[in-house]
Image (cartoon, rainbow, N blue to C red; front, side, top):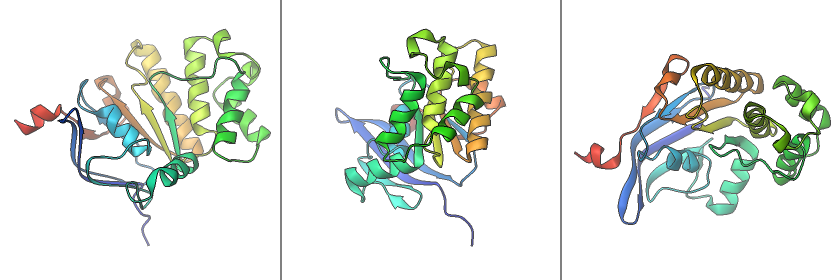
Length: 221
């Protein structure tokens, strides 16, 4: 029996201030199919990413993750599904400045209700090249190292879906390639599906475009 889709989305519309900020007719994503949500600023990429993470629901349309209707399961259900199955690398990394690299990962496990796993945590930091920086504070790290911590934190609970919001928009070509290589490598090693929301067309050489968004007014034209 074929595996269910990781994501199923149909006829989604979302509004802000009475105006549509996102329109998507359809998106289906089977497990293991990495790709891009591509579009300019204002096309609703981050809104869609937040919906796929269960952080918000659309005003209209259907959206399911791992067979769960995200509108029907309510806030508590979405929180649990996100904790169990979704990792997010935000555009602003949101690392906790007052605690160490390792404690950022420990806290992510604790907030998800996951049991401590020191070996797994240290193995993950070693995979992203930060084993020797486990006790460092985020402020002691370079921007590239902080981004690696954010990737490790997103993967620490072994999610089925890894979401990344504009991870390369401020990077030069060399660092752009390094970040996408890291995301792809770690997603593959963790068995996660990688979905990147971006306006950065450089990434089309490394990931297929699963959905290209336009600004809603342009779609309606």
